[in-house]
Image (cartoon, rainbow, N blue to C red; front, side, top):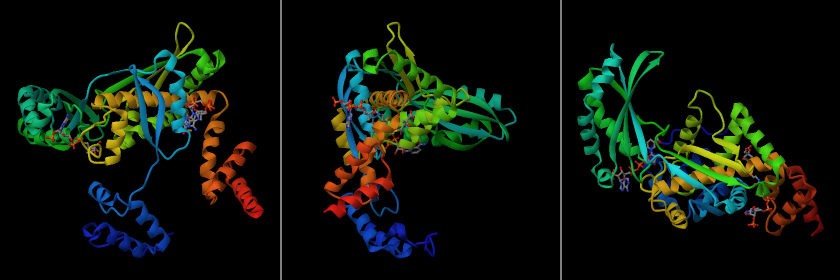
Length: 425
Ligand SMILES: CC(C)(COP(=O)([O-])OP(=O)([O-])OC[C@H]1O[C@@H](n2cnc3c(N)ncnc32)[C@H](O)[C@@H]1OP(=O)([O-])[O-])[C@@H](O)C(=O)NCCC(=O)NCCSC(=O)C[C@@](C)(O)CC(=O)[O-]
Ligand SMILES: NC(=O)C1=CN([C@@H]2O[C@H](COP(=O)(O)OP(=O)(O)OC[C@H]3O[C@@H](n4cnc5c(N)ncnc54)[C@H](OP(=O)(O)O)[C@@H]3O)[C@@H](O)[C@H]2O)C=CC1
């Protein structure tokens, strides 16, 4: 248990970040070396951190690596990925290289369409409420479009209504979905503002009471599909292909396996989402909810073999990312990464992200169906283990190489190797 006496630090949010760090250090009885670590990590980033989040005391650097070999819709791409996990980026490089001969990744999208929900309760006639709202379509469109004239100028705005009566433990509720084209924005703020502006009018028209007014992260009208074909030679032959297909059928049938299979896909997806300053939680929530839309949790991807026996991979998922709002525009690292990608629209970014997710899935499945994940993953993880046991400078490579050569990437063995290296000096 920590020695913290109280978690109440009065006025913490009003202090400048340096004073905040001091106050936290004092309250948490933090050693000076950790204060120095947090202080150094904040270097050059603290003003931005203080603008982005509340009670900021420091920043945390996540490595950015580049996925090479990607071709998306005929376009060569270098993709920045922000992740702390070794072998994730190598896997994408490897998988993308293996489908270059068939043209890489081909994509399609359903457009940048988001929805906000308005919950209407307390009516004895929820179906009647539904119809009353639908009759006001034109007025609703006007109210929503008035909220965000800039969005309208860029070709976005209100598009449609979808109204559902759902059964709940509290009885039926009428749920109004306003469907909005949010163009190059993720769109949370636009649709939330529209929902809040509309709710009082809905109450007036229906006599029901509105409670929640918020976007849904199950962005099932903003899906992106990516597909790619891997030739038998690039996979390692028929047996590997069939074992990869078997791995897919396993994931599609078993939620225990699907959770890990899909985590692998999200390794790639979340890394590009984070690198571009987008909201990883929004994408993750949407991806998992979409996967379970038929009532059970299954594989996010689909795999099959084509008439020539090649392996075909397909990934379809909601991809509500933007280039305008959130941290995308104000985080200089996100801006630099977007410049490496060279994308000009949120749509183009979304297509790349889903392609990376598919590449990631291929890499993990191929490794799992052949040598097992540990060989590639642990070889790259060996450096982390060397660092973990305190290796510095040239010791890091020495320890990592020895761990790889004996094929056991373990902390206890790394400690022994490091002790031996130091005793030999
Ligand atoms: C690790 C590899 C790529 C080795 O794979 P390999 O075939 O031994 O690699 P290689 O040395 O023959 O090199 C082939 C290509 O891979 C790339 N490559 C190779 N090494 C690097 C590197 N260091 N840095 C950057 N790129 C690298 C690179 O493109 C290279 O071509 P080149 O450019 O040299 O002409 C392979 O074993 C692999 O893809 N493994 C899967 C790794 C993985 O999925 N990691 C995620 C972490 S585990 C997890 O969280 C998810 C999981 C697995 O549980 C999901 C699931 O269960 O489904
Ligand atoms: N459940 C969730 O996922 C939630 C997420 N969030 C957060 O919301 C943030 C994203 O919000 P978002 O609404 O995208 O960002 P912003 O509101 O910051 O930016 C979007 C706005 O930018 C303006 N704009 C300028 N150029 C364009 C263009 N080409 N295309 C579209 N809009 C343009 C629009 O009008 P105007 O300037 O007039 O507004 C638009 O509404 C993320 O940080 C996310 O974490 C917030 C709440 C809930």
